[in-house]
Length: 314
Ligand SMILES: [Zn+2]
Image 1: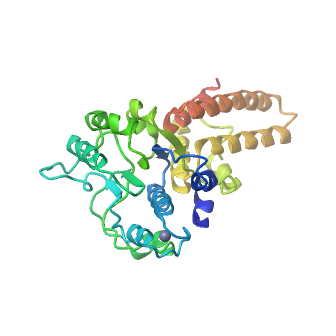
Image 2: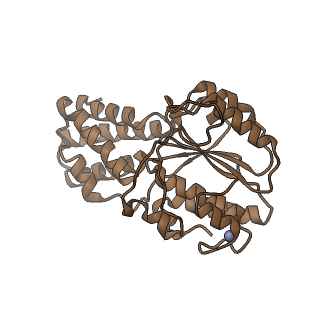
Image 3: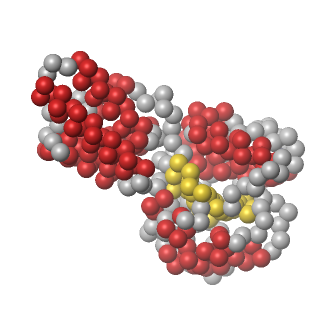
């Protein structure tokens, strides 16, 4: 059902949703009604959601080449029940707002939900503006049989475009939607969304693969170790953040590799007492940082703090 493209890009989500879809079709589980996707690759998140919507709405074998009317509509972005919601999508009459997802849009959704539907209804929330793509930018869409005439950007939601008034107007719809309705919020981090919404959603981190984290990259990023000083601590943190963004990798994966790296240095320098003391201290600091990633503190704060603490020595 789900294409192997996702197996490489977002392996955890691929596995989870492959199993879940099987169970949904066997009527042993229902599909979640409110989801948040977190991660750096919003375009892949979006394509993934379209594929979930397509598979749930397909009247045939759910394969990537299926030509049933639902699959055809979704692949040409024309399905009546699969809705983009952004600053430039799903605007009702008399809604002049161009920079935010407005309260009027929340009311439109409510109106839409009051009508019955035979489909799995999807509302995909993201941030968008007009955009022209280079041909190869939409290769993943093309490979899955989608039309590539997309003329809007696909970006993560931000607090400034999607603020509390709109979210509050939608709370009831999200809490008690009609059957077979799915709200999906595409984000970089769930911190960009009001906590009252987050608590009603299943949050899913869509990040990259363990093996794709390259040893040499790690060494390069922290090559100043053990001489990480105050004046370079923030630069190192910035470089790591940039690397994680480019590779779509999780901060926790990086920290675990950093930990392994320090343990290696420790083994090689077992007779260097001062260094051993420093490394043991820093291992504790990294373990703290790993705990913080699980407490959903932002990546920037975690890495800045860690590098400063390593520079300071406690
Ligand atoms: Zn189909």
